[in-house]
Length: 111
Length: 113
Image (cartoon, rainbow over all chains, first blue to last red; front, top):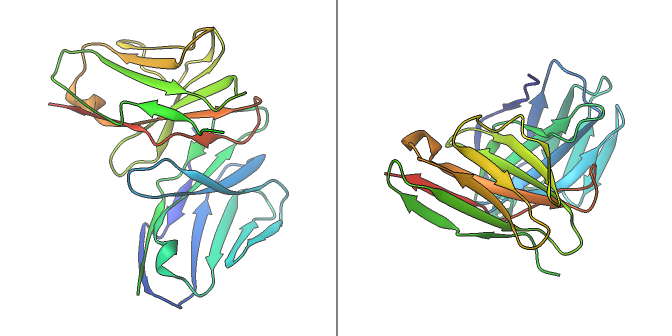
């Protein structure tokens, strides 16, 4: 079973601060996705990364896929209260449609 | 274009009863996936269906759980003789193709008393 470890599990920061959350595994993945889930709702896809070393930016969010395609990070610049939520990473192996999810990082941005 | 619709949003059942959860995929999507999210746990894959076919049910418990996606109508996840451990949020996702982006519904939260 492929496992995805996310850290930290909980993160509480002040508005305007920067933060980085991590997603690590001992397995190699063909692609990795980041989702954001708000309470009472389903996950919403933020980004998909497929190439080792790939960096993608989405406004204040920067996503990086590790060179070996085993890990990824999400960096948020100047966090805002609207960034509050559960950030999930998910990955699939080659030829697989099953997504393996991490347990998530619960982010709280305090105004 | 409406998103993935799940109902009911909340369902309360007593031990031994049956739970039926429904999922209408996005228009044009023929691939449906069910995931379960236990408290403080990540989402776990349960089953993948295409119209009228179960493609992969390797994540679904062998007993009491079944899923279908008929030619007409929504996909249904059925849990017979529910137990307290079945309490969870059940999410449906749909995709236009087998390796396409997944669009998740808002989930059905089952509570077993």
